[in-house]
Image (cartoon, rainbow, N blue to C red; front, side, top):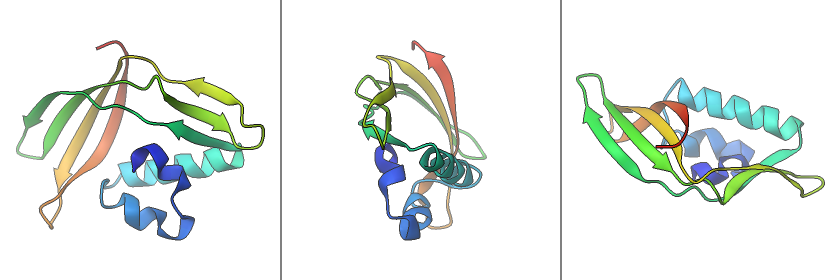
Length: 116
């Protein structure tokens, strides 16, 4: 769902993303989508996830991921020209919290950079 978050219907986008994200990550993603729309940018492709580490803490969990984003990026929605694309190894750190419903949600996602 995150690969296509910007293509979700605007009227249900927050609700659908809230199944995967908590604040402040949810608001950050929604704001980023709004900025992208104004710039005529949309996402394309898929990200392949390679979780390398999961650490449970008293406040939640930390997940380290070595994502393959080579087949994903941004495209201009008017010209259909690719603006950028990902890389073979994109190191990401996600902080998760457990909701009242018992489901884990991302509360913060941090891109650590290329290479894992």
